[in-house]
Image (cartoon, rainbow, N blue to C red; front, side, top):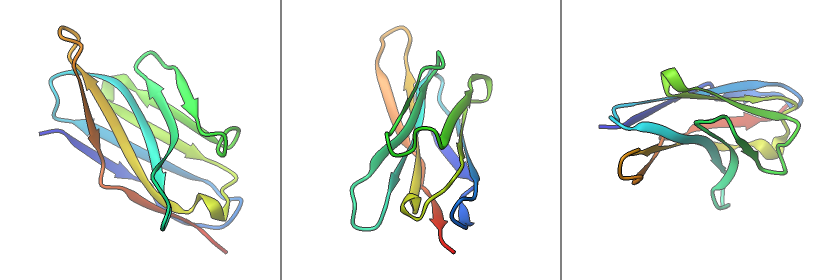
Length: 121
């Protein structure tokens, strides 16, 4: 059974930093991509950042220059370094992992349970 274990959320003051981690386990297939999404109260879930197995990254415009996503393929782990945090970054952050069967090219997507990030003075 695939599990995504997230850590690193919490309460931080505006301008502060947090680092989220997500470790995926339980799949016999290779990681195709991992990423972070967030959902604020009464808003839809939105993409924050993604990274492919090859290291290609994609960021939401709202976090470019402030957040950095990185990954460790050997550990099936993704990190999100969040700097210069703003109150509008407050949300539940969800880890996303896509595994791929390299033979059939079928993809399998999984979500973590979410970790709360609150930016407030």
